[in-house]
Length: 269
Image (cartoon, rainbow, N blue to C red; front, side):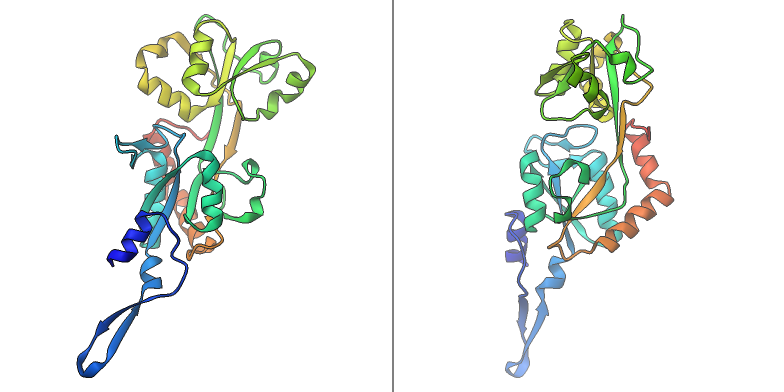
């Protein structure tokens, strides 16, 4: 068992079929297939760029909590598997899943990848809801995207905001790209932007980290966008998409998914 656990911890792929052999009496040898033992592990890829409430890291950068850990823990229990969490940078997530280095990543979408056919996708599950944030002294936008026309919008570099793309292309609206959500909030507070757009989970995480800032901002009740994310399964994983889908459906039908969303202060829309 030690060599197998070592390989998993080093994030290498267990692709070949080996046997764990025990000597028996009269020179006989009894072998147990290690492949079955490897399948008892669910190697979950985690986005290093995500934070509380989606993913919580300890000081050693181990995944110790958050919505996505609770959710994939529930999937692993349904498989009767042990989850192993492996953090990756955003650019490394897809290669890791494609190569079979990791089995599964959740809170992803075929809309966000260049080649969605490289992965097996579950049914839609956890929603990613984007909202608009403005300063407290500014009217909260309700009609979107109309209420954002002519505004300077703090956005995150590399992200697409389809709803305002026509206004951006026509020069009616200006996007100001920032590298992270705290920088977007700082820019908005200083008056360098009229509004910011980001996911509800990142808004919740920001106010949890900086509770004194909450009174300075208003968050739109109207969602800017809602994408029901999916889990991407490696085509090289020993687990099958039908297995994962059955569990995801069960989590939705028995109310577990809704309970987890509420636990972390997130909503369906």
